Amino acid sequence: MAESVGLVDSGRQAHRSRSNRAVAAEPVKPVTPLKPHSLRRQLAARLLQSLIVVFLVTTISFFVIRSAPGDPFSYESSNISLAVRNHWRDQFGYNRPLVEQYARYVISVLHGQFGYSFGMRSSVAEALSIAVPRTLLLTMLSLGLSFAIGMLVGAVQAARRGSWFDRISSGVLVVFYSLPDFWGALMALLIFTFWWPVLPSGGIVDAMHDFMSPSQAAWDRIRHLILPVGSLTLLTVAAIARYQRSAMLEILPSDYIRTARAKGVPERTILMRHALRTALTPMITLAGLFFPALLGGAVFVEKVFGWPGMGLLATGAIAGRDYDLVTATVIVGSVMVVIGNLAADLLQMAIDPRVRE
Image 1 (cartoon, one colour):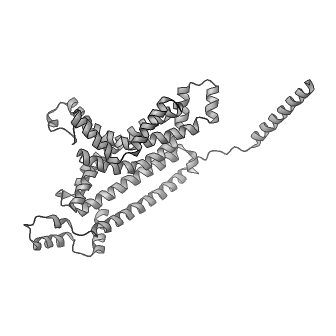
Image 2: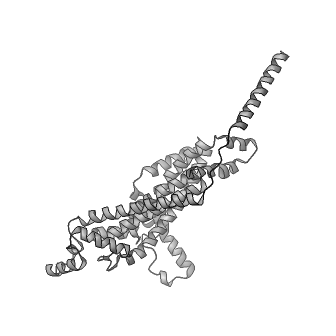
Image 3: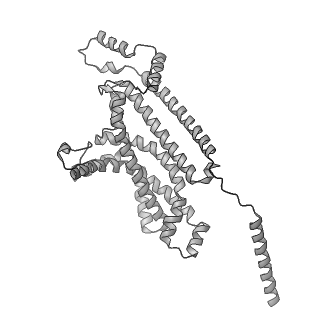
């Protein structure tokens, strides 16, 4: 018996030694360092792709919008004679062939001119310079809040899988995930401005904003941001939490997590420092994908809350057939989406060596 046990031990030791030799003999694949010329080449390729996307969006949107019946002067007052309208059409080039209009528009855009907005009574560039920062403020605040809340909720759900918190929060998130974009904005408007009127119903500041103290003015801006930002955040936080929960459930049974637990590392440290860091890479990809969705959702939210950003500007321009303004909002929106995706790709390349190869 003792001999058999000794043979078994000897066999195990031999097997371990062979395994150790095999592991030692196995070549370890080194992490490819990020070479400057490789990064420049990838960056140049992504910039070229982005320029092609923006050019195609500009071309398609221009021809689709200009092919619609009517023009900006179709909505002018009936007191203006047809001769005057035709004179304006000649002056602004709406009577010229469509290809010639396109060539003139592209040349003007390359010089930084997006045309004239008849609805805003100003240049399109001036109208966009006011509206774009307001939309970016809404979108970026919502994106940051969505990822902060969604990643935290998803991580806690995965760590407490099967608990009452996991079941209740999963049910609530599914409800939010299935709701239409504008529903959350309408419900928030009904609850917090009609049933329980504690927040303003629209606009960016109060009418008495200029007469407020600095602290009162700052709080006034925050109050006007709460409902639009909260409504936009609801659009994406449920999806991010679900993605985060699935990613954490795949990471938590990993060998390095079990090793950390065996070494006595506190569970909170394992969750926050090890698992969340690994799950960060797919979240960065999601940020690039959710940014266009937030921009699209901003159109509805700005319309509901009267927030004077790109969404409200675009809907008014479409109703008034303000061709140059509609085309410019589409171009600026596509540029913002391209820049967001490009930033997500670069950030992913910077933190994940596998993406660089």
